[in-house]
Image (tube, rainbow, N blue to C red; front, side):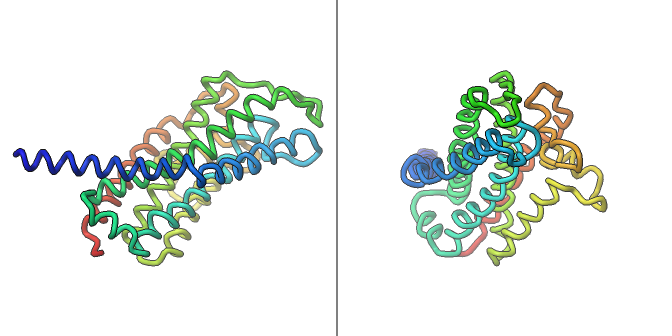
Length: 264
């Protein structure tokens, strides 16, 4: 039992090391690059749509901000997951890592958690909070000053967007463990995102109840539910939040279980 306990402690330390290593990279050069990129992409573009006659991404101010986050960050998460988690397995980096006292489930969990935390911080929360601060202070082209929603509700909205990102990160990772071709993995995940944004009529009607589609679907003439929520409307798709969390955990568990059986 002493040996088993010691082995378990070493495994947990190794798994925590994977997460710590990912976070160090996100708080280093990679994080600075992503932060600058997303500030220019989100806040820069948002500023342009507010102070000029350029057509915004649905609504004015905060609605446009949330729409931009939903539009740009999940596809980026899919590409990054395919390039890092899936790519490291194909390149042999993962085999070198798990040859150390790091369990495969710990490697998968640490990688996905680090990617989600780093991307959520640099692409969602920091750009979102920066926009929350400056939006009411600018002179808008349309003479409609965006009114800031309550900070608590705004933070919950950003968290919901981050949960959507977690769904697509874990989905891509799971697909990468069962499909050998990286391009196919990215294509399937991107199609899932596209169908979540604009669900086709032939899809099962419960699709939006059990997936992020209930949070980010953008039907013609309406805003996505998460966008409506930021200004006080009730979040009618609470079941989608629960099932998005459940699905993310299931995909992570599935990826870890398949990873244990892969040959390196």
